[in-house]
Image (cartoon, rainbow, N blue to C red; front, side):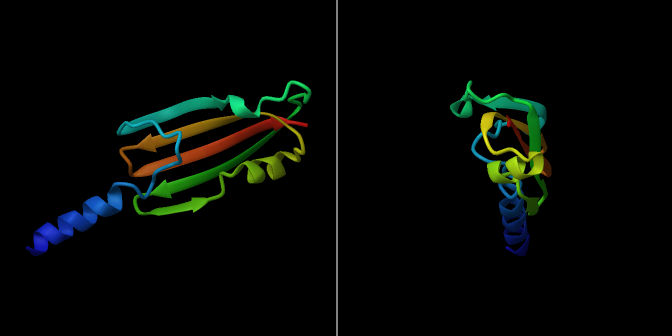
Length: 104
């Protein structure tokens, strides 16, 4: 019984702690996947600046700020042209989620 509880706890810890947002690819091994977010495209803004913000996770511990605001602050951007996302996920053990913002 104790082994069953230990296994259940391990599965619970490893099954979602390094989820990297709603754009996650459903696979055990995801490396260097990038995706655009077309909802932010503003053709009146020139993509002359770039800002990045990342969040990382290791098993049951995640930290970082991959928000749009953090990426805008990193690049000194006030007007957004478009946003890209980059995901790395290795067996649900190590994960990194990066938001990349282009704008003025």
